[in-house]
Image (cartoon, rainbow, N blue to C red; front, side, top):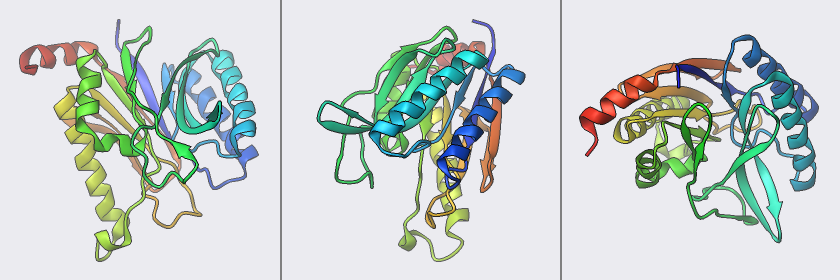
Length: 247
């Protein structure tokens, strides 16, 4: 597979949901213009309750089909009697290609059940993995996805800091933690890693930091403002370093 492009959107989810949906569509249209192959949105991008979430997901699927782009979008969905914090992988034909259920819950609410596994999705571009927010606290799971062939691990997030963690400038110092974390996960997994957080003016503790990293550096990053970052994926580079460093 030749080089391809991915994007991560720092979406403002504090807007009314109808506006958020319009913004999702706007960014997907931009993805088509910029020839982006896979676009990732943050954790909790859609949050109107399981029934309405499902209806909005169908609209997102139509956008994927209309603009010919793959996307990863996160929401809460009900399956049988259980509710899950889910990230959906939708292909460029508007079809559900894969679904990750958050495994490591942290502040997800009493009605959310954990998922149990980290699957690998064999897209036309490469194999990818998905982890949701606190899932990245498990380095073994991240490395295992890479061992199974994942070249990119997408991580939709809603990352909040703890008040006691820093004496001052909380978001500034939490950003440093996320910079260290994304580099660590990319380096130890020998994979591209994407952290994708939202903007939410209603949440004081949210750290709105979005980044794309490869094992040696952070390629693109965005902090405290709405927008999108884009990066080119070089699979030959990954093949070279994996051949050199894999054990």
